[in-house]
Amino acid sequence: MDHNNVTKSAELNELLCRIKNGDDDACAELLRMYSPLVAGLVHMTMAKLPQSARLDEDELRQEAAIILYRAALTYDASDDVSFGLYAKICIQRRMVSLLRRHECDAEVEFPLDELPEETADNIDSDPSRALIEIERERELNELIKNVLSPLEYDVFNLYIDGMRPTEIAGILSISVKTAENAVYRMRMKIKRLLE
Image (tube, rainbow, N blue to C red):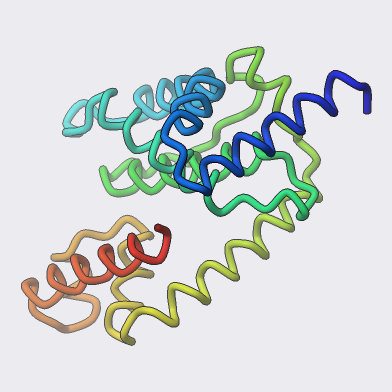
């Protein structure tokens, strides 16, 4: 690794450390640094949304920015995965979830060659590192399972698969109101966990 890459890596790690310590300026800097990644993923998601979808580009950008922030909070540099790849995977998953929620049945992929050039250069595409991401996801899932009630956890699994409360109610044989309440409680508990 050359000196320039070592310096960039150290600067990024310092920035992520500042974000974890609640530095709002560091959050703004991270969003500026990764704006090409966010813009590329939002653009590809917008292209896949059906005309009837009620999401607009600003909403998707806000979602992506929130996920980028959460990625900064949960990233662990000792896992030997670049932050760029980790953030990209997190944002992609959220975009796929939104597409599913808006009934986009097409297979959704975000190939690296469709991203802005400067973003693709900064993302480590070593597939073996995705295994670390899978393990991290398992750990997060275990944490989520521990804070949710059994009903909320069932609702969570259906919700992240893109199902609406009315569909969840039918699958779990509960009222729509119970499903809506469980979705609300589940989201609040997960939000507190991520904070």
